[in-house]
Each structure stands twice: as structure tokens, then as C-alpha cells.
Amino acid sequence: MQTTTDIERDVRSFVIQQFLSGNASRLRADGSLLGDVIDSMGVITLVAYLQEHFGITVEDDEVLPSNFDTINNLVAYLSGKLGA
Amino acid sequence: MTEFETPKAPISAATRISDVAQLWAERLPDHPALVESTGTWTYRQFASAISDTQSWLRELNVRPGDRVMIVGENCRAFVTILLAAAGLDAWPVLVNARLAPREIEQIRDHCGARRVFFTISVSQHAADHATRVGAVIEQRCGFGVVGIGPLREDVKPEPLDASVPDRVAALIYTSGTTGTPKGVMLSHRNLLFMAEGSAKVRSVNPKDRVYGVLPMSHAVGLATVLLGSLTAGASVYLAPRFDPMTARVTLEKEQITLLYGTPAIFNQLLQYAKLRKISSLKLPELRIITSSGAPLDPATKAGIESIFGMVLHNGYGVTECSPTIAMTRPEAPRSDTSIGAVFPGVQVKFIGSDGQPVPAGGVGELRVSGPNVMKGYYRAPEETAAAIDAEGWFNTRDLAKLEDGNLVIVGRTKDLIVHQGFNVYPVEVEAVLKAHPSVVQAAVVGQSIDGDEEVVAFVELLPGSPCTPAGLADYAAQHLAPYKRPSQILLVPSMPVTPTGKVVKGELAKLIADRTSSKSLPPYLEMTSVAKDN
Image (tube, rainbow over all chains, first blue to last red; front, side):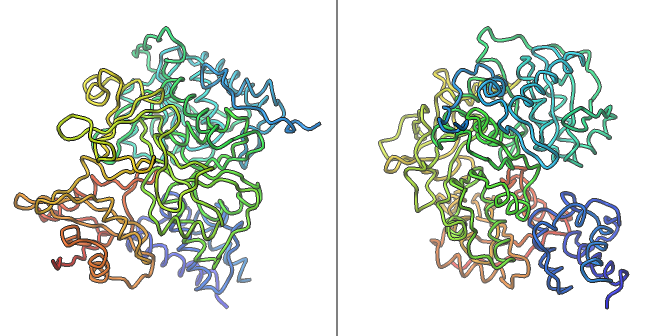
């Protein structure tokens, strides 16, 4: 089973590589992702990654700022889905 | 008897754009006017909020003729301050919070804003701008948190036009796809003409629930989506930004009946459908879907029509024409990407390079006349005179023709590439590239080399696509005459776009120039090119 540390590492790595051209210094754990880092097309890319990488189904009504707007929110959301 | 047994006609008694709320408050006071995730206002509550906000603006020393800048994204606060200011004969200056600080300051300084308001409840961008300028943050009863910029004592109000309908109702800065922003002055008459006309063509009525996701800081969102709905007593579901997942939930849950989008929005819906493996959506209440803001390509139209099971309508316009010039009609759906017939009450003519009207059916520069043509560009008399002639014809600088009663845009006069003596219309090359199944977006610009212009294409691919520039070049070669084929195809992870989804070609041209002069390029630009084979 993946720990929250594993989840955060994987999510951070994906966001940095996919949306920030590998520039990790532009990402804060509590910084806003939606609108600033990830546009609406990026949300689709992120959801596709989460579903494939973590083997989960992300429902449309789960794509909320409370789940997706920061790395911390994403980790908490994924931990809940994975029972980590 | 229910309130809808005798559908009400669109309002035609309005003089100012703010009148539409009060007029429907008298007809259907308890009917939903504005709906957002934080709450709903009936027409009565909406009219009352506008009235309260007018008192508040007066307390904040806003006077008739003052420019009142509103920086935000779609929400009740944005709409209410806009209509309240317009009702006071102040000039609402509508600014998308997604603009950069420099762009916002440029607009503020140009228009001489008496006050700048930031509607920050649903917009982190607006909140950041408010913080940057030291705005006072206030919780407004009913519509959330607003940042109030400092009072500019030194600005003078503009004199009021004697005719109320001809007073400025909105000032919208437009950059088009090149050049410096210009402030487009739209009058109450301009906006009400467009709102009432578009509502009538689409038979908008109080039963309609309209998805309000196009930015109301721009002409389509303001005139067609917001005012076109309010003038007909419909309910507007405000969304500050588009994402396909929220859109699908809203379309289904709220039983949306009208969806206005852009090609970019519909493309995202297509990608979403691929992700979810959706082949069709069941939206029995949805009766009209329509695209505007950028050319619609056949692949997007076909894909969306397959998923929605209905015709995707199309339209064309420019901010200076409030904005619609042509649109396809619900009673005459098109199977191609035609932009449809000219908007009712609007006249067009086509002028050749010799300054004379072209023969019937010929391509010429499109000129527009009618109640939708703007008053002019603010504080720019020379630009206004260059755009509108003495007889009131506005020059779109688009090349167009009439074909079977429908307007066909061939290209922009300044967006024409002359390569080896042949005319190349970027829109045509872009349409071909966008039809490739791996292409999300394509933009074509000219590059001057040794007295000639080369055709250069920028392409954004689907994430993870194995497609290469060489593969795209092969594809282009199958569909384009040799002189039209791009000499270079450059892959970019994302296209620079305006808030309304138009590609900023000026930025792309600059990237080419920087590349030519060996300046350092942004790390995201993957310069992969192919040689042309012709």
C-alpha cells in the first residue's frame, strides 16, 4: 500500500514535470494549482494520470478545489480514496 | 395557472442595460435570475441588489461619467456592480482578472478609473490584484467579498450624451490578436440591440437556464450570454471559469437549456469525453449549443455533434460590433462550419483593394453598419476614424464574402501571408492541421525572409501523442497546395491564448523573431521543425 509520502512524491513529480517544465521551485505544497498552474485542459490530463497511476476512478463531482487546488488537498483526497 | 403558461416576450422597454433586472422583477419577481454555487437571486432580489449597490457606489464618490473599473470573473458581484454603475451613467470598465498586472495597470491608466473594484469571492486572480494595489476588502451583504481600490480625486467625469441610449454602458479593452489594447465604447443601445436580437433569434424565454461560463468582461459573455438571457427573463448559471467536469455536472444537474462556448471549450469537452470514454451525453433539456470567438473547425463540430446528438451552431463577431455580425439560425442548421447569415438589423458590404465594392459573391474587406457598431475607441480619435468611416461603416479588416446568403470569412487582411507571390490564408492552413486527430490547437503565422514570407505553424498536440512534426508535414502535404504548406512546424505544449481563447499570434511571431536572432527562448518551446518538400 502506498503511504501519503509516496503519494505526495508521485503527485508532485507529475505536476512539476507536466505543468512546470520541471521547475520545482515554482510549486508550493499550499499554493493554488487550479487556474495558476493547471488550466482546464490540464485538469483532464491530471485526472487521467491519477486514474491510471493510482488505479482509482475520479468522479466528475470530486474535481473540486477542496480536492484539487493544492498538492496538500490532492494528497488528502488520494489518501482517502486509497485508504492510505 | 403557472407563471410560464404564457411565455413573456423579451424586454424591449429597456433604455439602459440595468433596466432589464427591474422590468423582470415586476413581471416575474420570484423567478431565478442569477444562480451560482454560493446562492441564487430571484429577479426581485437582483433588482434590489442593483439599487443597493448604486447607493453604495454614490457613497464611494462614483459620479455619472466616471469610469468604474471592475476586475473579476463571472459572479453576482461582478454583474451587480456592472449594472449598478451603468444605471448611474458611470462607465463600467470590464476587466478579466486573468490579465497580467501590467495589462490591468495599462487599462486603469488609460481609462482614468475613478475607482477599481475587485470581485474576489470566486477569483484568486482578482484577490491577488486587490492585494497588490492595497484595496480595502469589504464583505458585501449578498454577493461576497469585494476589494475597493483608492479614490482617484484627479479624474474628470466624461460629459453625458443627451440621448440616454447612446451613453456608454460598457468599456471593453480589446487587443484582438495583435497590437496595443483599445477601449471599445459600447452604448446601452448597442448592447440592448444585441441582447434583444440574439434572444429573439434563439427564442430565449423565462424557461431557459443558460450556462454563463463565457467571461462577462468580454462582448459575447456580456451582450449575448448575460444580457441576452436577462432581457428574456431567463436564469443565468454563473461560472467563473470553464472546466469540462464542472460543466458536465452543471449541464445535467441544472438541466441547462443553452450552452454558449468557444472552439477551445468544445475541444476540451471532446478531450473530456475521450477520458471518460463517453460516446454520448443525455441532456434532454439542452436545446441550443453554439460556438463563437474563433474559427470552428469541422472535426470539433463533428465530434461535439456526435456526443451531444445535436447541431453545434456557429457565429462570428468582433467586440466593436457588440459583437455578433453573423450567426447560424436554429431553424436553418448547418452541416458545415459556416458562420451563418448576417445578424438581423445589421448591414454588410465588401470592399476590394481598390476601395470599391466587389462584385456580388466576391471576396472583399468586410464593412459593417447598424445599431451594433460601437461609439468608438475611448481617447483614440484617430483609431476610431480609421475604423469607422463618415457614413458609419465599421471596417472589420476581415476578408469575407457572401455565399448562398451566408457570410464566409476567408481571412484577416492583416493575417494574410504572401508566399512566393501567392496568398496564403492562415485560417485555411490551421483548419487542415486542426483536423489531424492528434492536434488540439494550431496557429499559423508569417515569417519574413529575404523579401518573402514563409508559412510557420505552431501546433499543440494531445498529451502523450506520438505524432511528430514530420508526420504533420506529411499530413499537410496531403491536404494543401505546396505553396500553402508550412515551411516549419513547431510543437508547443500549450498555445498562448487570450481569456476568450484566441491565439495570441503576436506572441508567436515574436518567438520566431527571437529564434532568428538567437535570443534565449522560453524553456517550454520545443523547437522541432521540418523542411518543406515542395
